[in-house]
Length: 173
Image (cartoon, rainbow, N blue to C red; front, side):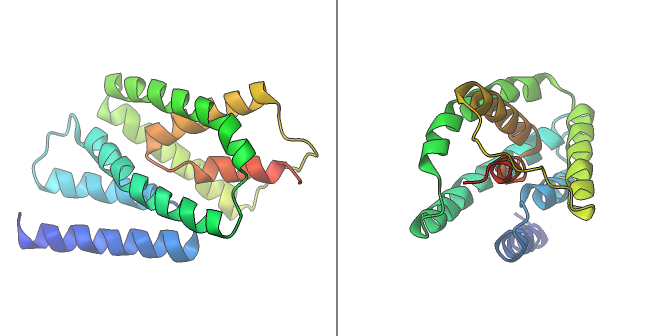
């Protein structure tokens, strides 16, 4: 591996880690476009470059998500009853979206990624927050929410926080 690529990957990891750790933003929003550019610069096939960037970002999310979960659990900030009920939908949505991603073109994935990031940016910029309700959705509601969270997360290589946190905020405990 060329030295400049190693430096580029290390710098990307530092920026993503800093942004995610200090600012609380998802790393996939930074990582996927930069990885795409780095992979194109290395001569990767443009037919699959976004797929590779998404997969690489998702692989990086696994250990960081586990670390984050442990830290939040230590502060007793995880609603495990909700986790148990929403996880099957998230897993099914993620599984289904991986098959969809496999048949989508790089351009379609890139457009979906860009549209989702624009949606998140506008939501944050305008400070749009869902109105709180008093009750957690039932099993059917959590299953549908999980399907959407898992599916979108798999297509844009995010851990799902930008989708699951607003769902959590809708419910007042």
